[in-house]
Amino acid sequence: MRSDPLTRLPRSFFSRRTDLVARDLLGCLLVRELDGTRLAGRIVEAEAYIGEEDLACHAKAGRTRRTDVMYGPPGFSYVYFTYGMHWMLNVVTEKKSFPAAVLIRALEPVEGIEIMCSLRGMNGISLLCKGPARLTQAMAIRKAENSLDFCQKASSLWIEPGIKLRATEIAISARIGLGNTPEPWFSKPWRFYLKENPFVSK
DNA sequence: AGCACGATTAACT
DNA sequence: GTTAATCGTGCTC
Image 1 (cartoon, rainbow, N blue to C red):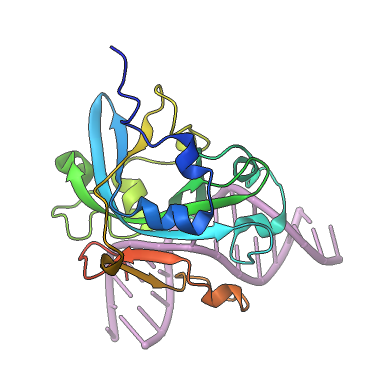
Image 2 (tube, rainbow, N blue to C red; image 1 turned 120 degrees about the horizontal axis):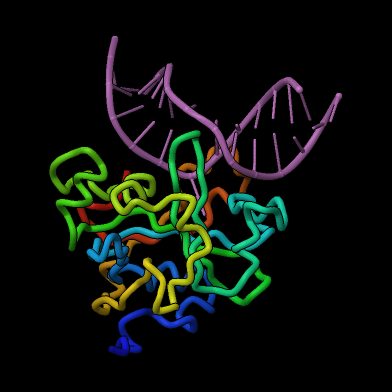
């Protein structure tokens, strides 16, 4: 059976300005297929990391083994490990060879909630996918899920279109957790989230 | 080979 | 509000 070509966001969606991709991902459904079962959540928070000039972006170090996927074509996963214990999920954006990505920071749980709770070792949905490390744990996304093609049918990770949001439903702020990142990058308005949505991280 | 740091979280006081 | 957990990565020696 042939899959519906509209089921997954196409590569052209990701091959655009990263801040616009981050904004437009709000409301879309992130889907992870695990053992034939769908785990899914509505994206409610995302951040843009844009190029070698952006000193908050890992590409500030240039092309290395870690950042290599960001220099490839858009629509691929960039999964990295940090703080000695956490995995973060990004989607590569812009044209090939321009390093940029969107960090998926929080989801409103929709499908496979019991399995996600089991993977997190907890009950209840309020904290299930509220934060970038929580959602990767809930969806079993780790090193093996780096460099997967979101646009290819065989991939176990993809994004489906969501309802069109009104501009008034979207909030914009500086990115979170940037530590010592200097200005102007520290204050760039590249975090997008749904206003008053309880699943957005703090 | 050694070092400082990190796009965070949970468990504290 | 503060802090420990815990290790890959990129940089310096």
